[in-house]
Length: 492
Ligand code: HEM
Image 1 (cartoon, rainbow, N blue to C red):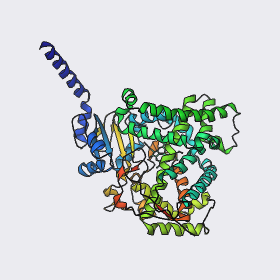
Image 2: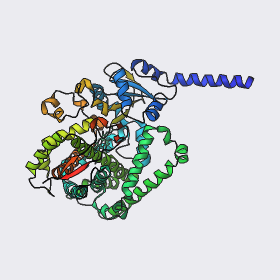
Image 3: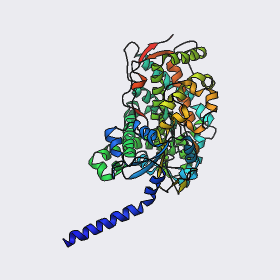
Image 4: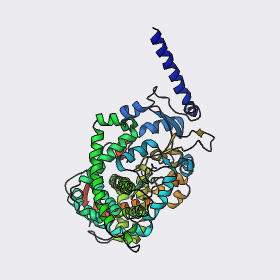
């Protein structure tokens, strides 16, 4: 009896200590509205099990409580916003340059350390070091790869003509993976057996799946849970496949003479990382980490963007026809043609459609930031150090206070210059914005536009799937519960 009493007292003491140590988080809830959810679990069960990570979970609470809410997911509070003004304050602040630890750790475990995962001053330094890799002239040197790989994709899509509706996400992702790897580690990769037979692509996809799970359910990052569930094995196998291949390419380059600065490839990610390694500025593992994580960041995002644009245009034939007219003026003859940078600049309507797609179906729906220090918002709310503030890109893009009552409707005119001018600059942020925005945003837009131009000039695309029936699922890279099939007809 005495032992039980003692245990109870110790238990109560620890519980009170636990609550006391977290008092600032509970005080935050007094300032930022949101549902309490279940004890310990918060809204985790509703989000993960009941709603199967549907985007509508966050939308519901943002509609109920206002554009900035506090959501408890498990024992952790997340401040989530769809308010462009708050997004701007967060994304421009030096106190919020770190990606949330859950996200950074999950990515580092699978893809290694690099720009994507580094924190604080180390990230600032690395960003400066890697920025030259994405300069305009470097991107221009990638155009032959974009053109060649898109030609292969168009030939494949041509075999689908007359075969009814086909799911093409995997084909498009294979295209984006092939350009992401060649532009990151060089075209030598095309000769690797594991690349040709898609083993490396499957390894990357497997890692992405694990990363998403680790980010959305952080308890799966626990080594024991991960090993027991077989995830650790899966991760090790995929990571080792990728590491072996990158090491092979890397060692070949390291054992050859440094390339002259006049070579356009000098600033491709691998060459830049090797240069930094040779100068003693970054460790060897980070050369591998940079190559691996840039491919992760590049391929799924770009593939999803192209696939979603084709899907929306299949649902809205009137807009597809306008795009086609623009392309036909630029490329009078169907079939294969080279797309130049100047051509891309002339695709004004296609760009509007692309932006509208990224608004309604952003390939990255959520950008989580962790406060480095206590951080005060302009509305007076103090966000304690270590709390995650999530910029809800998906819901910012559909915020009716910004986009009006038709916010959820597909309307490329949202990107007419007059409409853009009148909107808050942080109302549209598919590549995030501010200090830690997407380093590859121009690359993503250029490659997507080029692929869309070649596909839409050659095919009329249809689907029986309705826009209203799309179901959006939270993921590192946006997921549709069901991917609509597309039907291809040749254009002349
Ligand atoms: C349409 C395609 C793309 C979209 C929609 C996209 C979107 C984004 C977003 C929203 C972020 C910020 C994520 C966060 O804050 O948590 C990001 C970061 C990043 N993206 Fe992209 N991205 C695309 C293509 C690319 C490409 C092609 C590359 C590289 C070739 C790339 C490399 C990166 C890197 C390295 C970061 C991290 C930057 C840093 O932390 O400094 N992305 N991207």
